Image (cartoon, rainbow, N blue to C red; front, side, top):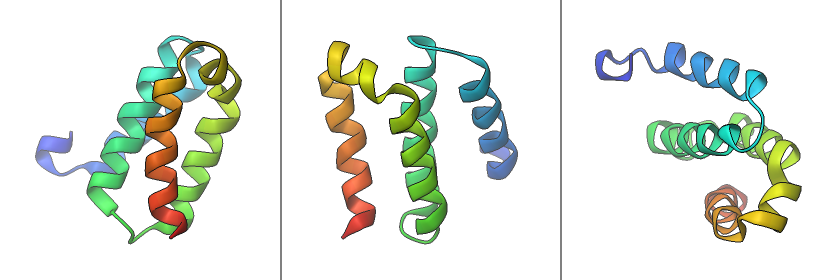
Amino acid sequence: MQEHEYFEDAFKVYERGVKIFKYPHVKDIWVTYLSKFVKRYGKNKLERARELFENAVESVCTIYLLIDFQNLQFLHKFYMMFLI
């Protein structure tokens, strides 16, 4: 979908994925979703980006802290881009 510039449709698929799957599968979905969203919109959709990052942190933050701290730092780096 993204190759044909149907970005919003692709993002809807990611939304469904993060609602359906649980850890550990949802971790990769969130990282891909957030990366592609930031790459596509940059700082143009800050409020939506903040909501996405908050949802990601709420759904997997504890697991990241206990199991995969490196990926939490990756998410934090992107999140901090929007706070500045």
